[in-house]
Image (cartoon, rainbow, N blue to C red; front, side, top):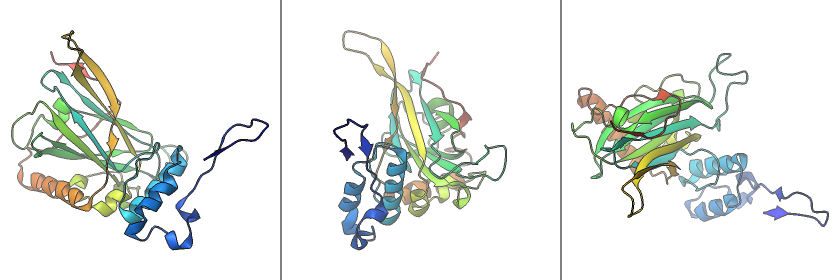
Length: 264
């Protein structure tokens, strides 16, 4: 909600947090999903949005479509992988804090595990892996280089769905490794893993009159977090790690961000 005076002051954003809801609506009951959405509907800043999102997710398991702030459940599709490489670029927006004096001094704070799952168009999980994303760091994964280079099935699909689930490294953000995190994550730990932001680059066909392909970059979409879905991804990933003999384990993230590139 915005308010202005006759003196034409700058717009004022009124922030409504979960604690401002009536005592009878403290986000404990599944029937309050809509109330939670309504409380956050006016959010347009990371502080407001992150607070609303975190409270709603923890209490109701409902992942809001806020206009700002990182997510805990991201999804994208990557097409035309037979023609060009595509990339997923990820960062940690600091929603869980960051070292006061920078990453080289003091204890780790706000570290997240980006748990990545690549699925073929017929829903099969073909690879999974995890990588550490520290606050404000920037990492990337290549579809061909990392996600489909050694799939569980041995096949390299020309298009994939990529899922990214966030989790606090070490359980509280102080961890410095994400070993097996993609196989052990639960919906409960994912709900605390808010703060991952991502973008995907890919190529698409041009207009019908042109044979050219064009590079696009789009934000990863925030998706509703579902307990059974998280359990399915984690369980299938655990099976890959335990029985795939190294196949289906995607390479971890590389530092920096990359754009789409043509296959030579």
